[in-house]
Image (cartoon, rainbow, N blue to C red; front, side, top):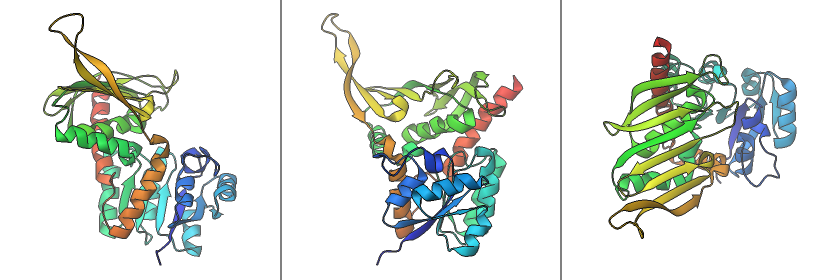
Length: 323
């Protein structure tokens, strides 16, 4: 018989439990994704607001616990999910390392500082606990396919690109940084062009130039989340243009065509649009976590990936602090 892994969710908020319900076709929360998988069973929820934990457990199953220690005193837990606010990630991850877990799945960012993230990674390596971080687009098959296409060289070399995001360089900017690394490779911070404080007092939304492939630029532009939510990338290659729009629900590919009007001119024309399964990124993540557990492999989105994205974001913050 296949083992059924017990799951404890720490943080009974929107991403943990309340972005969707059991009736939703898309699996938008940790609770929905884990409770829908036949090889996982919810032990319950931990939240400092007992009413939130109780409300979540009534919807998804399991019990409500006021603290992590209470859950582990009553149950054996295999997988823990950290879905609490950013500032709590480090202390919660550190506390969880004291328990005999097989894997921890943490919301991004891994921590607020590079020092904290490095401490967590070292601690989890010492304790033999696998660590996955929810940079969600890594888990979506359509983005994996795009990364493979780019790596194969079918688009030609990367030339330049731009992107738009909001709600903090660490909180949401690391999403873009991580996706760029996933698709294009390693990144260096080149310059800062400005910043705005649109949501967090300690996490500005910074605009900056990044260098990819030893110098090919990517311009990362901050847009205030007070106006609207945006997450888009526009990537130019020698033989293709790729636009990631609608937060990643669509990938648009443009092909090079000869002009029918101006002889000798070539232009980019919309070609194929892919509707991604980003709405089920959490389902894909849980499927991949299950694969990690049964085959003892590394997650697609590791603590080291999260640390690298955080280091780049903190370099940008250092430039902002110097201005």
